[in-house]
Length: 335
Image (cartoon, rainbow, N blue to C red; front, side, top):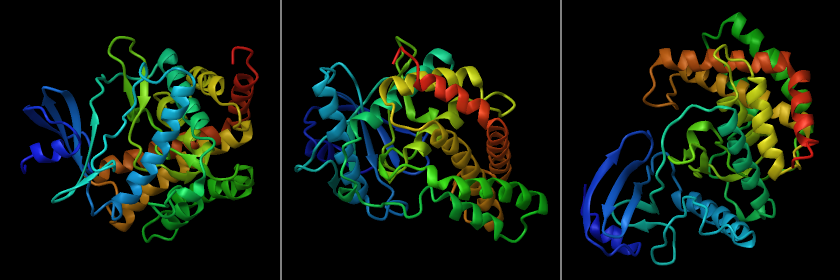
């Protein structure tokens, strides 16, 4: 890698770099863990082939983080709470030098599967994110990924593919009919995270609880229901790819303790729609050869397609029970 000292210096990190190591967990950007006398940092070189206009991505992130910081300060939490706040270089949260770079201070975390206790905290983190960003002016946001979470378009795309089976068409058309009829439930667009999943929370090594949401690259205008639905899809699922009712109950209690504006039917719709969309996108990748989900084999994509479709179908089948759980959480006196 090129000399990193000058890049770090631009972000105000002037101490000696002791060592660095490459992090390979992500598949899009080049990510490095930097050890220096000033502490530990995460340095990323943005993949400009994927993010064609990274300045717009970082603009959206900066706007969202200003709102979060203001919310934390207003509640006296700023300084005691951690979140990936990007450092500034020349008054911007990125630096251009033989590439597009960004830096934030490393937040120590561990990997753990969700349980009822931790998933409740996950819900409260998302609710807090939505509460802090509720006042966002979406006219200030760039649409960095066109048609992201355009559920209908993404499902129709796989239905038009050569090789899609009659059974696959039947499954997706049934879900699409519900989605088209239910889209009217969506609240107006607002600033949302757009990629809320269990893999995008950092777990505190001491408390063993989620501490902060990460990966803000998809922050833009969108729908609260899809954030809620994606979180449930990723964390409140049984080994049989059904909605885990106890986990859903805990997640919903955490979420609505922080943010109560999301309607029950809208939340249920978000769970079904996002799961169906993601299933369709994995199958589309296989049938079209697009390879959006890079570094995954077709067999892994097939499993993802099948598991997400099964989850969407089960959520659709049990939507009344799911709605009851969410409704009770909204009405909980513990909020």
